[in-house]
Image (cartoon, rainbow, N blue to C red; front, side, top):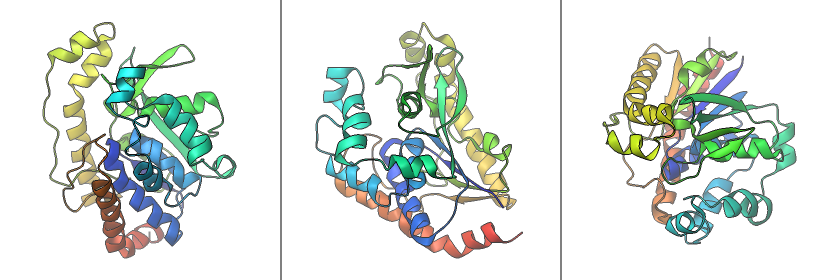
Length: 283
């Protein structure tokens, strides 16, 4: 029985996912494959490296550090998320990733990225975080448009995976997994609204297919939410989503809200842990 896990993005809303993943590790819930989008990818690697508590720890510890992420980084580097601080100092020195555990784990891990020339999603298997391209694909998955420079990998340019495929349920359902769990970072009633259609066309005029993907994202996202709801009702997937709204911004570093989001992930998971166990082990 192979279990697949889909992790939605959402910036610091991903602290909800962090709480869930820590419960999974504490309870010994085994996952065979993970498909992470944006923050879902950046945070999801900690399950494969078996590092409980790491996501919340470094986010809270460096929340007030101007070199972490925010306007200072955007103005000085062109990226809202500081490349040197986030993908070198933190992962190698300040709160290191367990590279060896990650590399030798049998969990298959995929990061979703958006190719800005095609406007399409690509699903990249991340086997070794010491591999420069692997780490760059992770960075690309979490690089939000407008506030991030495109990430160039093998002469292709990438940004946020959530633009082309926010909840890659179709991709995961067509892979070799018997059961699929989906973790969302917004409450059940949420639906995305249509945004300004002109600005993306102007900003990404050199990449019209990417601009089109941005402008159609609300429609794609809502269709994916509907599909997730339908599959959940049919008992084909198991979904964990926030039971209430926590007002946390994608990048605003409020430590209290971070803790609240993380705690909610733990609480919601513990409430459904018996149902989850039945879903995984029955049928």
